[in-house]
Length: 504
Image (cartoon, rainbow, N blue to C red; front, side, top):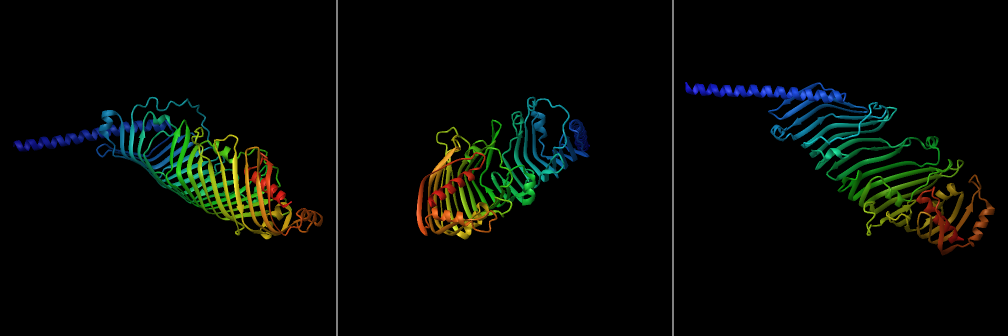
C-alpha cells in the first residue's frame, strides 16, 4: 500500500510538473507572441505561425515579414535552437546554439521614401545585456536593391551563408556593423550590379571562408554597343569590357577604425584578365581634372594594404578612334604578367612608408616583347614617379595598326629596340629615349587616309636623313602634363616626343 502511495505521489508529481511546464510554455509562448506582435507591428511586419518549446530550447516563426520604410525582409522560417533558458532567467543574457533563417529575401527599394522623421540614433545606449549565438545560418538567401525605376541596381543569391560565434552587446550596437563574429563562410552563385548607366558588373560565383576569397568569372560589361555608347555620354568617356577568369585573396582581414573600413591582404591573384578599352575621341574632351594613381590611392574612401597583387596571362586591347571618317587604331598586349608590390595607403605618416612598385612583361601585337618597371610613393603629395622599360623588334605592319588610323601616318621598315626612362610629378616630367631601327621611313597620309602626302612624307624622311640602320639616343626629353588627361596620356606624350627627337 505504501509502495502504491509512493508511486501515485511520483506519478502525480510528474503529471503536476508536466502541467506546470505546459502552463509555463504557454505563458512563455504568449509573452513571446505578444512581444513579437508588438515589435512587428512597429516595423509593419507579420508572421503566420509561432511555435515555442522551452523544454527543447527552441522557437520557430514561419512566414515572417518585416517592412522598414524602403527595406523589406521576408523569410519562410526563422528557427532558434539551443536556447539557454537558465542563463536567461539567471542573468538576462541570451545564449542561442543556432539561428537558422530559411529562404530570406532582403529588399531595398530606393523608389520608396520614408516620410517619418527619424530621431537621432541612440541604439545600444539602454541595452545592457549580451546576445551570444554559436552559429547563424542562412539558406537560399537573396539580396536585391532596386533603383527608383524599379530596375535592379544589385542582385545576389547565396546558396549558403554562415557566421560563427556572433556577439551583440551595448558596444557592438554603436558600431557600423552592430555585431561581432569569429568566423564566416558563404557561397554566392549570382551577382549582378548596375555600376552606372554605361556598365554592369556580374560574377558567376563567389566563395569565401575566414579570409580566403575566390571570385569566378567576374565581368564588367558595357550596356551599349560602341555606336550606342556615344549617344549616352556628354563628353569623351571610355567604353570598357573586362573579364577575369578567377580572382583569389589568400588571407583577407577587415576592420572598422574611426568609421573607416580597413582591408589587409598579403597576396591577391588575378588569372586571365581580359581588358578591352574603346575610346572615341570625336566627342568633346572630359573637362574634369584627372589624378595620378598615387593621388587616387591616397584619397580612397577606404584604407587598404595588399602586400602583392599578381596578374597572370592577361590580355589588353586598346582601340582609339581619332576621326569619324577613319576606323579606330588598335594596340594589344598579350601574354601579360604583372606584379604590384605594396598597394597601400595605410601608415602614410610613417617614415619608412613603402613605395608602390609594378613590374610588367608582355607582348605587343603578339610579337614585340615589352618590359616595364614603374614606382611611386602614395604618401608623396607631389606625386613623383619613375617608369622605365624596353620594347623589342616591331615591324611597320604592326606599328601601322595604331599609327595609321590614329595619327594618319604610315611607316615602312622596323624598330629593332626601344628603351625609355621617364620620371616626373603632377606637373612636369623628363627622361631619356633610345631607339634602334632599320630602314625606317614615315609616310604622312592625306586626310582620307588612303593616299600618301608626298610633300610632307618627303620632308619627314629628309629630316630623318634617309637613315637605313641606326641607333640613336636622346636625353632630356621634357614634357608638361595636361591635367585633364590620364597618366597614360602623360606617358604617351613623353614616348611620342622622345621618338620624334630621337629620329630627327
